Image 1 (cartoon, rainbow, N blue to C red):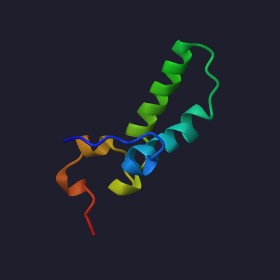
Image 2: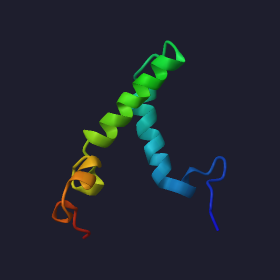
Image 3: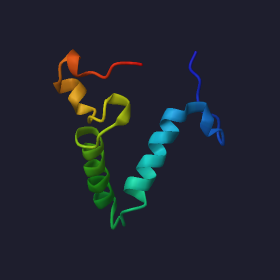
Image 4: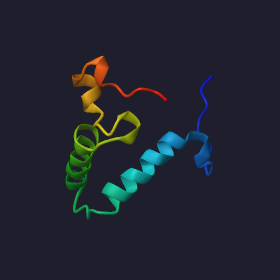
Amino acid sequence: MLDFSRPGKPTDNSFIESFNGKFRAECLNTHWFMSLDDARAKMEAWRQDYNEVHPHSAIGNKPPISLLNGSPADLPVEP
């Protein structure tokens, strides 16, 4: 059975709410979108930066792309 977030209940899925907050703060609140194509281009640039450049603390301050390109020895160790 799948559980979905209920409207107005962001704690139902804290991972997506955390991502939504980052996306809002780092992309939506920092750009003016002049057209739909402009919005798509800016969001795609943000997505690429987030996945290929931006370090994530949950994976040892590495970008997610490093998990695909690296060896298992590069993976963070769970405490």
